[in-house]
Every structure is written in C-alpha cells, then in structure tokens.
Length: 239
Image (cartoon, rainbow, N blue to C red; front, side, top):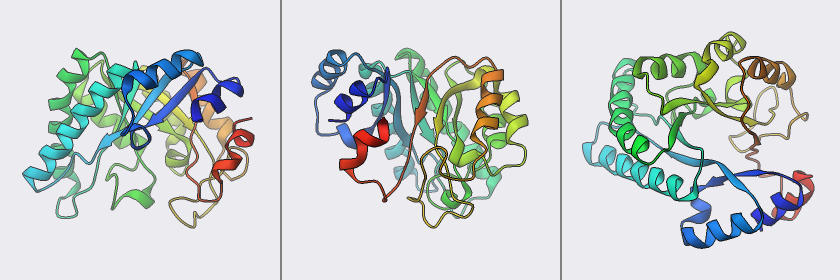
C-alpha cells in the first residue's frame, strides 16, 4: 500500500524502513517498486555500533552488514547509520568504538556500492539511539574517516535546535547523502510527537536554503514519526 500511495501522489522515490520488509522477499519488493516507477532513496536503518559487550557489538555489526546487502539488493542510494549509546563509555571512547565499527563496514559498503549515511539525532534520543547529537560532531567523524562511502544524513527534526546548524550544513557540502524534512513543537512531548512540515517551529526554509546552497541535487524525503497520524490518513498526508 505504501508504494501505491507514493506513486499515486506523484513521488519518484521512497525511503524504506527495514522493519516493514523483514517478512517480504526482496524480489517481490523490487517488482512492486518497478511496477510503480519508484526508486529507493534510503534504507533505514542500521546501527547501535557502540557497546562494551563484544557479543552485542558483533551482533549489531553483522546486522549492519545484512542491511548493506539488503540496500544493495533494493538499489537504495544510502543506508542510514545510527551511532548507538553505551552508558558506561565517555564520549571519547564512544567515538573510538563507533569509528572502528564503521571502518569494519566500509569495505563491505564499497563492495556493494552502498553509501553509509551517519545521522545525528535530537538530544532526546541520546541515551537510547545515538550519542551523536550534533551535526558538527557527526561531520567531524565523517571527515576524519574520509571515505567516499561515508557521509551525513540531515534531518530537520534532529538538527534544527543546534545554533551552529547552518554553518555546519555549509561545511558538509559533498558529504550530504540525504535529507529528511519534518517539523517539531518547541518542546516535543515524546519521541513520537513529530509534526508535518509547516506545523511546527523549525525554520525549514532557512535550513533547506542552506542545503540547496551546497549544491545538493538529490531527493528530499519527508519523514514524520507520529502517533497522531493513522494509517488511513497516509494518502491525505502524502498529497
């Protein structure tokens, strides 16, 4: 249904969440995408690449490898990577472990022609999904690793709060691998309280103008995590 809704609304691409396709065959998904003339802008997501427990870390690295292979099969342009969080680690140690994990994945990503897009998340997710919460910090790591297959995924919800966001977008330039557009209340009530573009306080036009100025010519995806939008409303929201 998602693919049909997107096609009927005139979209050219679609982002795919892994949880939605785990029980489906890739061949069937590709046939459906071809039928509705949609490309895959991104596969979301893999990560949790920071852990003190070596078995847990290995599990998530192997899961990321599977995600890379899935992204390749779907001809997805990028795989979004979330850093993860280990409460017993300092920021510096977390950064070292994350870097080592990503460097293990990069040869596999290159072999499969899949770009890894590191996505910094809003601080409300710091103790669960990502210790990397600022675009500047994520960009520093990407630049240090310096691979054509590693870049940044920008999400207006996750980056708008940072007073340095516009300057960091300018610095990201060719390291931008994708963009999510959405909106937020001044103080989100929960992690599933995102808003549609124009329904919140994010200076979306200013952020998108900065992204455009870097020369970005790829897709802009709308991603809204909300428990206030029912499945029956999807077609209306897409339009």
